[in-house]
Image (tube, rainbow, N blue to C red; front, side, top):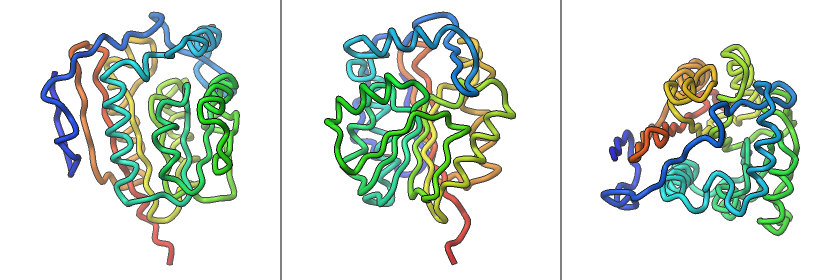
Length: 238
């Protein structure tokens, strides 16, 4: 396993070696579609996975737990969060970690069962708003100090849709606000049947935002290889 850091990630939080099982796709085709997402019958597969005790092993897999720990460090780099948006909640493994640090949190997911399961897990706290929505179509009159979007954008059908989704998120990011992005790399995403992955989306987001910090995580399995990046909205509030 290799860990490569950029910026000021807290290295002491990671052990020298992670003992992990492979984070393998549940099918050779991980694509889905609802309201603009890449189409296929994996929507039903996602719902079946969400019915499992530990969907995608997000709680039980050490690689996923460390990925979430590093996502949280990036999210909290500027301290407590007034108003945050999480795009894609799966079964709430990361939501549970992020929510205590937010005065307000909006959680969106295109799969209704993901929202329902996360709400049950969180016991419906009053400071969280829940929305079933596509990342391209979601809109808010509020601006968010933090937006977290991880393992989501590679489900979109093409690079143009990814660019549109990035632009939509930028419109909702407060001046000086931060966006934390995470994804498997291009090679893995393409092997899973998607158009592209982390490197391509990072290049798109860099056209709109300023990259502040990057973390690369790699585990024992070929499937355990992701990039996490914190971006800042360079637009001034003045």
